[in-house]
Amino acid sequence: MTRRELLRAGGLTAACLAAPRLGRSASLVEIRMQSDARGEHVGFDPIGILIQPGQTVRWTTESPGNPHTTTAYHPRNGKHSLRIPEGAEPWDSGFLLKEGDHFEVTLTVEGVYDYFCLPHEAAGMVGRIVVGRPSGPGTRPFDYFTGRPGIRDWLAVPDAARHAFPSVEAIMRQRVVRHAGPF
Ligand SMILES: [Cu+2]
Picture (cartoon, rainbow, N blue to C red):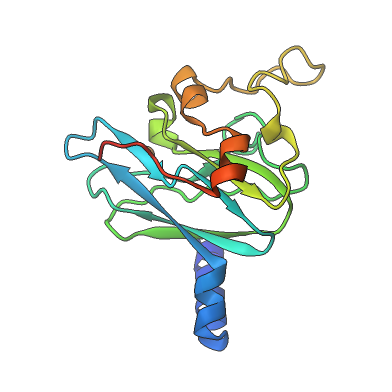
């Protein structure tokens, strides 16, 4: 855990103690990071969610021995393409190793946020969060930046990841899109 994450966790604990329990649970959205026993199938569940600005998302790993990350699609995260709203802060949890390890972000800027698991992106371990009304780079095609001046080195989204994302339309309709598994 970095010092910044530690401070953030401490701040959240304080906020949790101060806030009424009901308000806290209503604003927190949980996403599990899962693998099957052999580590052949991996995924975020739910894989797609609709939340409101100011809500907090918590990722928790439930697959010990198979480390995961939650990492925003953003050039600051290893030159991945920008797929979160312009002006939103990218996040990167680092490796979550032990069962129950978790990471939280509070999303305040409206739009679509795509994220991935660093070791499993090519296996299709990605997720999508819509905050309020869908807009921004996350609504564009995966290769929207190709050929744009000044953007030469962003990484393409791997095929398995492209196929794994739930559509924005499905998220708006269902609010919660569960991962099909198997885990
Ligand atoms: Cu993973």
